[in-house]
Length: 124
Image (cartoon, rainbow, N blue to C red; front, side, top):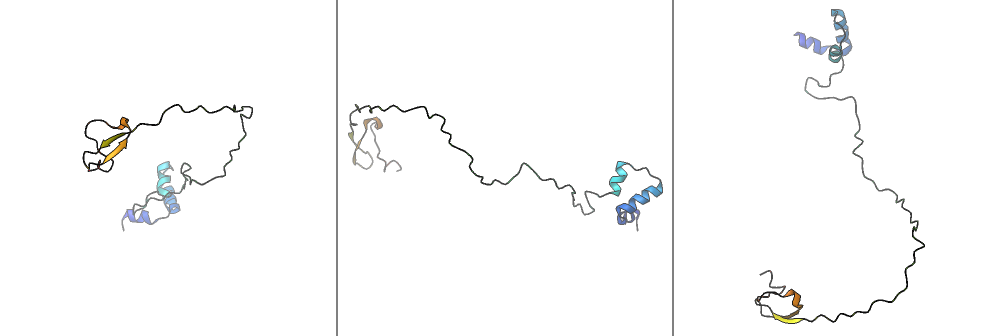
């Protein structure tokens, strides 16, 4: 049995008593060795302080606390007549699709160039 096996088999209290018997002064390193180790021999980390992460909280629905206080009750909408429509009806032009040959009526704003394609033929 080696010395490492012997020291490893001792409990933390026994390690502390052994160090006191050998005349060692108690420093933070000795207490850390005699106390609970965060990493065991099989390299598993054990943590005693289970701090909860307060930044990560579950999102839940809450009651809507908004209340309509009606801030601008003194403002009244004036009762006026609507403005009459003065613009004429749109004038459409006949145009032929250069792919399928069908004739369509469309607004002249949307025609440009000499080769017009209808909506069905655009994907061809």
